[in-house]
Amino acid sequence: MFSVLRDLFSISSDELDPIGSSTYLFRLNSRLLAAFGVRFVVSDGPLNDGAYTERAVQTGHDGSKLWLYELGSPNLGQYSPTSVALTQDYAEAIELLRRTDLQRTAVALTSAGARFDKLTTAADVVLRAVRDGYHVSARAPGAALLVLPVQYSHCWRLSTTLGLQNPRLVRLNLVQTGIYFERDLNATLSFDFQPWRSGCRFDDASEMKSFPTQRTQTLPAGF
Image 1: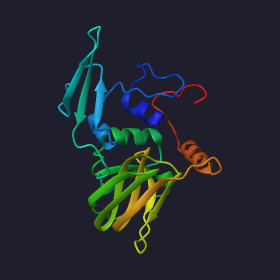
Image 2: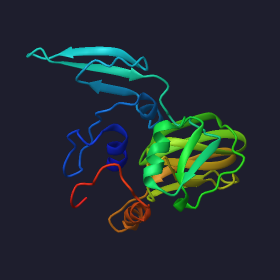
Image 3: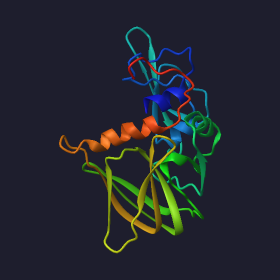
Image 4: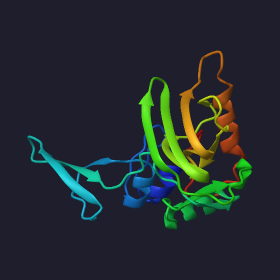
């Protein structure tokens, strides 16, 4: 997530966290923020982009101000693209994210081994937070793809209602969790990470290392 946010929302002259533990967005892109599920933005300066609606302004004792903005139409799980742009390269994926309409097209690295044919648009999508995860339901006239505002991990486990066709989880837009399903979806997404079951996090690290990376900026030493 640090790498993707760095490469999408900053340039080389911006002051990034040298150890990669915190992310700061210097170059806002309302389209990308909405796709990642951002609904509110707190800024130390006014935003002139019409995509943001000012909700509150707070003034400190020294006269400094903070602005609270709401971003219209964020992805709350309802993004259901009908096409997928495939790439083998991290840098190309970043460029695709910058210029692609992510409501209609998702970006996937072909190293994930995913194929998506004849996608339809999902409807009646409901994403609800539950303990240790989410419950998601939707329907579609055929095969469909949901892009959730949830960071992808091999630690996610998907359990479905008995009798429904098995959906599958895929990594989309480099860091987002996608669900591929057919016709009906009624599933619980649970984060299964325990001290004695930590291999899924190693799988996450191995997968990221396998991406043919050509980053737009150099990672901090030891990252």
